Image 1 (tube, rainbow, N blue to C red):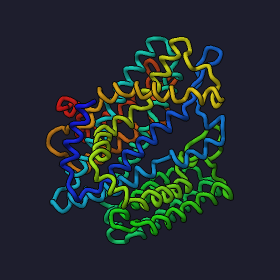
Image 2: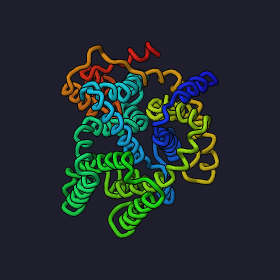
Image 3: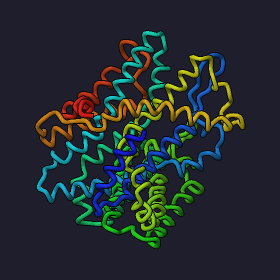
Image 4: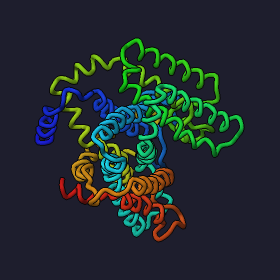
Length: 438
């Protein structure tokens, strides 16, 4: 651990003065919130010799308000907009092509997830030969692979950065409000006209809109306490109105039994939450940037960001393996009813065990964050096409896991599993090159 800190300190010392360290800090903060939030709400338990995968949001409705804090996907896209705006502008200034820019982004995004999927293929094969039902394998893997839905959406947003950035440069905040209007119309069609299929378009409208806010942040449109407070007040008022007067549920994540989900597909409350998070976090940007000028907090930020994709992708796999081990060892810790006082009392212990289980995953697979390319840069259309194929596979795996009854040998969804690897190959992403370099 000392070696990791020393390397992070050496990188931190070379940070140029022009870098906005708060962007990196928010990325690390949001990862931490996702990890802790997922670990807290997970509520697996056993009864009648079977394991049930559930979450505490089902048992204690008051916990759904906590999702207003722990649902930090808006921060991801906000930070992504800022970072992509900076990198695309820099690439353009240097005369780099879209293909050169995109290749570098895809290496960092696709490389780590291929290692995760390869491990789950092996786990699926092993459980299948061991007699585990395909439905259980699918359920366990779906729980572990929840993080990859974000990756699928985010990569698609990255693919259109040249278009969204050009729209921002020409139209400014209008490019944001047009997307807001489209999201409103989409929700009206989804809820009032019962055109549920169109609801999926809000994955584009809402998350690209938040991504546009990242451009706005970079150009100073949200800077300062007064502006930040105004954005937060606008979002907060809209959010409260929608969940109290409108048809939307309180929870910002899906809860079994709810007729409407604010996140699958995303609805207007998610956009309102993005305004709240954006306003509150950017209203304190000044003092936070001064704090991050100090060596210790900035080194810690650099350390986390150096393994951020690995932590994000593997934290639920680590938790799933812990739960599986507890089940095999005689239901250790799994007999407590979720949401009870005893269940809450042992949460800190479970969090500690999850964290310990995550450490070897990070040490073993962190090197894949430095994935290499397949040689000469490929045409932009091929990179984008390959990324789209990979995203289709990631989305399907996030929805249903790696296995299902009757899907194929041992119940594995082979054609779905193949999509991310085929897409990465088309995009020239070779995770083994980065692993060997690491």
